[in-house]
Length: 235
Image (tube, rainbow, N blue to C red; front, side):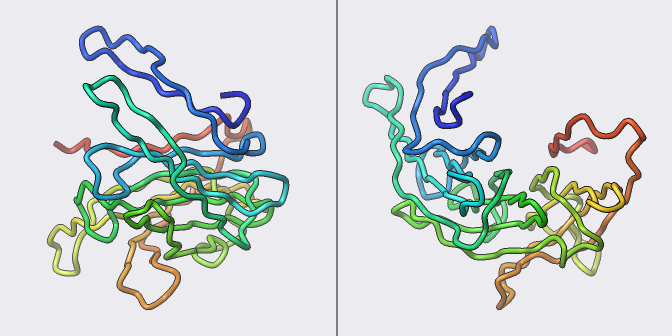
């Protein structure tokens, strides 16, 4: 909500598609305006989806990650959210955060998914990947500076995870998750759509390997907003 602290849960009626508010939850602290992001997923071996909130608590402060446990109430009477753990990503202040989740360590697995964060700093942008243990404690695993992974001075606009016709060297399908980023060069204004392979087996703190970048010159009237989604349009 507008206070950058309250999380609102909604329900969608499967027949009428009517949307109704069913619960609210207040984070321990408010994120600075515009910096917070939410990601829902099965980050542990649980029967239900849980939630992660990430953002900066103050100007030039490091990103804070809250893991929010969702405990179903008895007799199907709703659920109770609560903060399980708090983690501070030291050394990475961000003016804005983008969050999503995907099965990276075990592709197609519906549980123990990874958290992916896009950290939008004033001068640089980073991609952070990590996992949660059974106590819902966050563990950092990979960090990528987009200024190193791409050319120029890219600023992150959006990101999404998916499988973008990923193929092995012999042409067979590779089910591994990939990451797509949409960036704009701070100097030239040129935007770029880039696809990265994710290689967790690398003995490195950077799991991303660039595979493709498409550059696009923004019209003179500029970008009004961006959105990134994935979907299968080939059947």
